Amino acid sequence: MLDKQTREFLQTKARDIRVSTIREIANLGKGHIGGSMSMVELITYLYFHAMHVQPENPQLTGRDRFVCSKGHAGPVVYATLAEKGYFPKEWLMTLNVGGTRLPSHCDMTKTPGVDFTTGSLGQGASAAAGIALGQRMRKEHSFTYLVIGDGESQEGQIWEMAAFASTQKLGNLIAFTDLNKMQLDGYTKDIVCMDNLETRWLGFGWHVQRVDGHDITAIDEAVSCAKQVQDRPSMILCDTIKSKGFVLGEGITANHSMNFGKDEGEKAIEALVRGMK
Image (cartoon, rainbow, N blue to C red; front, side):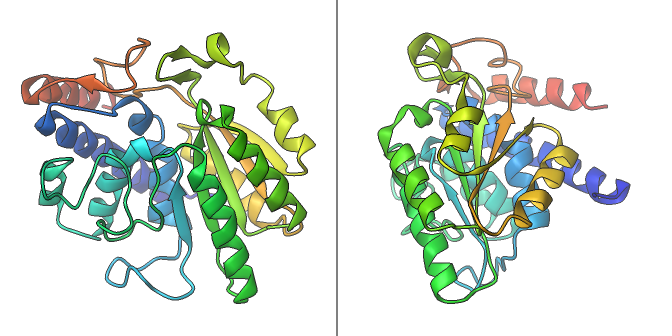
């Protein structure tokens, strides 16, 4: 259970990461704002509370690993890594420009702190299962944390991984679905319905929980529970809002990737800060 001081610290970090994510995309003029903003509380909780990592030693042996299989959420991953101290915050202003170390999608060969290159949807899930298996083979007391999207869950590769991880009893694999009910082309219910994800993951032999993905306390309780389950992998379904906290995108369908400039970004930040007072 998070105490009040820790909860407030994490909420403040989440706000700062939201602001940084808006600014880095606004500086470029376009980017994947929707799926970045929907997972802010989750990634904040992982990097600033749950995960054993050392920014000054990104390749630390025995560290926990994080794989963002929905690689287009790179902007929020970068904002979090910068906030954690993996690299200077000034790098955020180079998002997806020539010669950057922060490409549009996560790339482990370019960005300190990124544990696996993602972007081809479904690919990161398979990699995370392999990483978790490797941790167990090395007898490490560490976890692999995986984030997938609900639209991404339409990929067959996700379910191949689900069967493999269950068969291997990967209790050190804790996955999250960013259940924001939207994908590139609209609502998931109108494309390939994802309403029965709980039943699907249970059917594949996973331990399953469902929480409010913007409630840090609920995330903490779910992760704490998942860590006690050692005979199977865990899936935590996170109900979220796409573009959460970004006034220009929240509540509209065309928010997967948006065009907006610095002035619009600063106005959105002002609205965000006002709303949190």
